[in-house]
Image 1: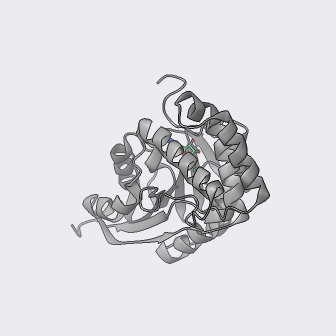
Image 2: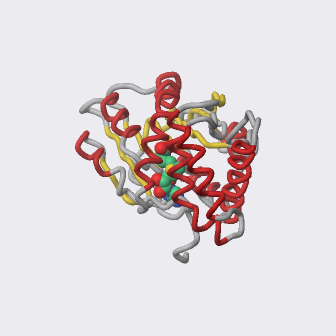
Image 3: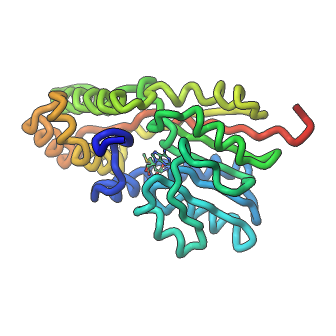
Length: 269
Ligand SMILES: C[S@@+](CC[C@H](N)C(=O)[O-])C[C@H]1O[C@@H](n2cnc3c(N)ncnc32)[C@H](O)[C@@H]1O
């Protein structure tokens, strides 16, 4: 794969750290609530797929305690590595291409990963295979097409510019094979994968300081690609960054769909 293909928001860029902090501020509380309702306990073996930053896998390590196991994998573990100090095993691993790591696991979780993975069907199969009978899968992914506006309240030119640049960002994602309607498909995909007790819900903030941080870091990260593709000018990007800094945009995110299911116990199929 060429340097300019594949995952758009490369973890090696400095903005990735700010993006992971913002994702944590926006979504960790909801993710942790889902873990508690889907099932998590002392001694459990967990696999955090496409971990990115350290907060989710560190929370899992604390929750499962010293008798448990937490494996955090990513194609680029630069921002995950600090979780090793919390007892997390960190491994460079491509969920679509590499064999699943040695398991089985009681709980497997991936947040905002599969939407970016071209062979997301293979990735999902690999996760389901790695579950123990009765093990839980929680997949959380965006559905940008369900609510495409970064400024749902488009009341003036600043908000209109923000939504236009968001449209350009989505175009870049689409060109790299992202499925922008993936989130809504998760309940069906989990059922088709043979999971039982499948359920799903959706969440997104309508305005939050962390949305501003996330958008500024994302725009910095992709600005060259936006201009090279003719999707924005440097002047528009500078204007948008100034508008974000002024704090009046009420930026939202795409809806995050959380979908869960349980691998049927041996002999029950
Ligand atoms: C948008 S970030 C989300 C990070 C984290 N899960 C969160 O919600 O804060 C997507 C992450 O998926 C990782 N990723 C992308 N493609 C992957 C693949 N094929 N296998 C494993 N991880 C991948 C990226 O490196 C990045 O860390």
